[in-house]
Image 1: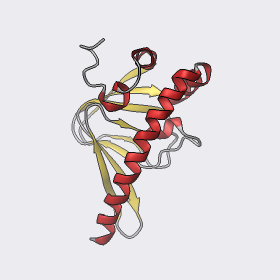
Image 2: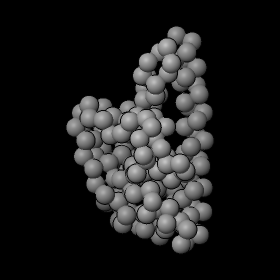
Image 3: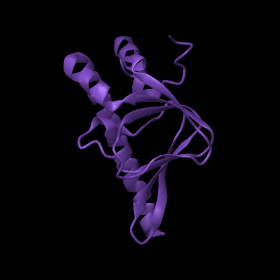
Length: 149
């Protein structure tokens, strides 16, 4: 598994090999062209994505400032965690900055797996909480910069 999963990044890499394997089985490969929109803010959130190669810009609409990029996800980074949190609506937009390959894990299927296997669910949601916490801090700092400018 190590050769095929060198791009796992911090989210999957912090999970046990058993949980990694179960999640990867649920994965679907996606390819996005440079500039292609992956989803829009407010869309139903269907997949939890992990960037395999390329870069994805995460954008939000800020009243009086327009659309602003608040982060860029690169290889191993997770985006669209909204697929795992009710009401499962995208809180930002995502677009490929360059040609990008991503692994999408259907949020509903992963949520079902978490309910069936509570140990797996604890691991997944614990790591997801770490990602969300870090992103909220980074987003807050980014928005402060945008609003000050």
